[in-house]
Image (tube, rainbow, N blue to C red; front, side, top):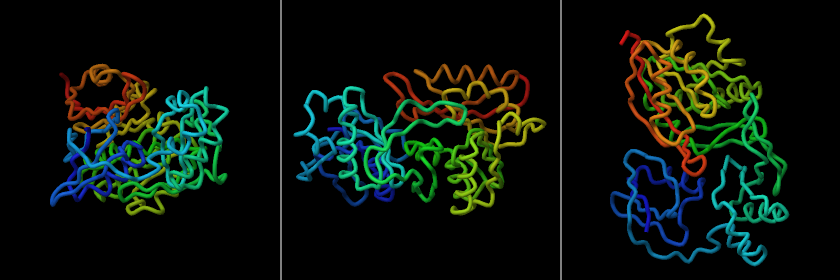
Length: 340
């Protein structure tokens, strides 16, 4: 059976993340020894690479816990063949749950919402209505259970992220990614987050206490409002500079000033690579994200954009699955501003 072997000191945070991603196999029990915690997970679960955490094949004792998922609550109310089409995973953002419901279950959406609300114990359940779109990167959401609240405080690691899920895009599934990037920032370095959203990368970085300044830019006025709020409620927030507007306008006349440039806009970040290369210092790192089927495609795109400078690829990661065969890829690349 598929599971994770996790060092004890990391177990609570990892279990929390797995619960939020709905990948723990609740048919079986978590077990512990003196040094590690062993967590059963679903066979088809997408688990990001985390230092110190190992995917294992092991045996686990059965659990008698019931219900094991919101699907169990619905078994006597929705035909079995339709239940099979429901995605068992959902996003929990603070007190809010966001689910995907296929078209064939549209008429059952409110009952599904109530089941998710009962299972999670949160305040509100929203259903996705379409994909993230538009210049300000938001998606339409429909309330299907609970209270009509859309603003919430989401907690990950030591950060608190205040966000309105109807006004600003936020993914709790990038918590590990934010910690990976934050861990690369060194004392006194300057960071540019080109598409900052509510500022979760900026908050993670300043919480680590090493960056001297983080420029968090977003074209969505609501996002910038929450960047400022999150700077107020998190340690180190006085080092966050919230910038409203097109990042290209902000970068006009600014060159080679950032030690790290974060480009977490995987659908269209490629259009801004030239701007990122100009903004990064000699020896600085670009954290580039793209939806792709392989690592080679985003790596080649970044190398072409950096010419005539040289590129040293430090790390590459499958951050999360987007669709069958397509991944949200993360590439860390150091730019040497000397001619090849």
